Image 1: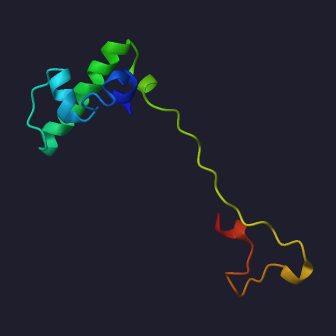
Image 2 (image 1 turned 90 degrees about the horizontal axis):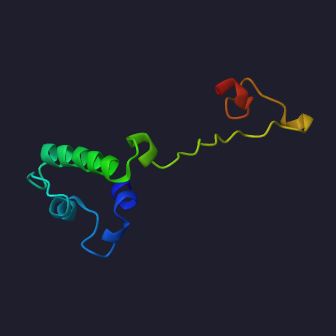
Length: 95
């Protein structure tokens, strides 16, 4: 996502994977080694910050707050909460 924002011109031009970013940004690491890839990813972030002139938190996409589903309260007296059966009890008891 960060490489996509920093280098849109790489789409279809080698891509934005670590292998291509290694060449484009002249990074020195062993590709497909977990520790080396993690370090390289951090270097990509630093390059993107410098390239765009913005801090890391501004490179991240905005995250929407997850909506929590709540079962509607029963409206009919026949569907009143049943304390003996947890599947028929008030959903607020478990939230």
